[in-house]
Image (tube, rainbow, N blue to C red; front, side, top):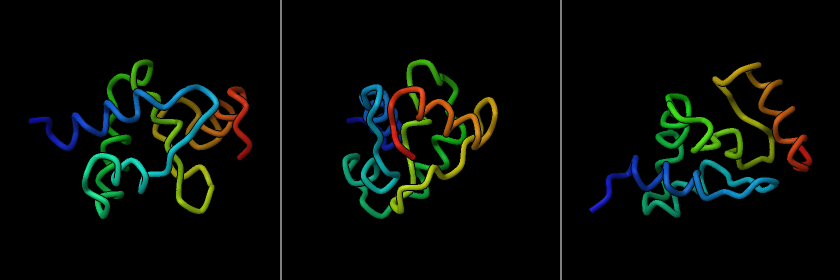
Length: 87
């Protein structure tokens, strides 16, 4: 049986280029619909940004949310726009 973390990482790894999911959608798909903050924490500590594109996880209101990767929030928005995401 997979842990919540394993489920979340697999879900986020499957988000295709040019698409996004919300923290809440990821939590729901992982089987814990109220664990959206835990999803955020996992993304904050993502160790493999190449395999797990955490920049593709956004807030439910359509804004980018936080990003601990290169460039911070501006870097996240730049990456998303380069993939064709309107944000």
